[in-house]
Figure 1 (tube, one colour):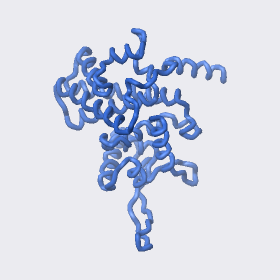
Figure 2: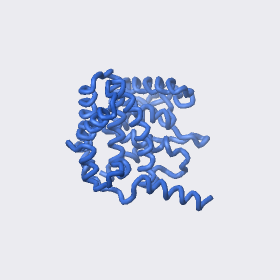
Figure 3: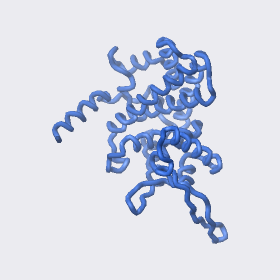
Figure 4: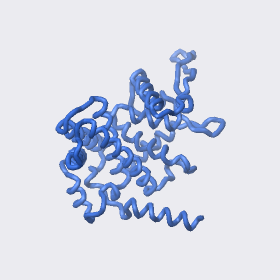
Length: 278
């Protein structure tokens, strides 16, 4: 699975362009192909949703989405101009958040652009980011999306803390082949005070991030109401992510190895290193 994941990430890197001022960007049509869209008109609708998200966040659209003309060669050898979008990294991030969750490429795109967006200060190429840095970045992204998922679940009718715990278990059961949070906790041989998300590698965290983002989106998009329906939605999304991993020939999340260091240990080490450098 690791080789496939690295290869897919390399595809996103290979479609990245840098202009004369050193700013990176992606062409929409190239990104559409990487994300598995055969028809560009459907991908164009995803871009429109991403632009709406940009507006909602009160961010200047023109800083991230630029409409341009691009010359392409026809089969006859002649050229014609087509409409194209030039996209920033943040624009790509919004696009993968609004893309078709049934496409396995989208899950990898979410992981890639989540890491890239959250680690803009790094000057190294993406493949030079360490596994620990990936874990910390995706874990922080997951914290944010879990809060948003909780809000979406609350709107659907999952109000009480005990009900939210049940709701979360349904997501885990779908993704982990029937295992609940306590079962995963036990399988990882964690202490009672330790959190399972802090003891996952980047691949496992990415699967859970995809589960969380797509469940939130589905709850809101389909305006799902009622605890039973919300629980079933979370279960089915988790199950779909599991199915995608299987189709890719990947390792099931419950069988992935537990990292030697927890997220907290990594963060403490980073703080100590920063103190020494300063």
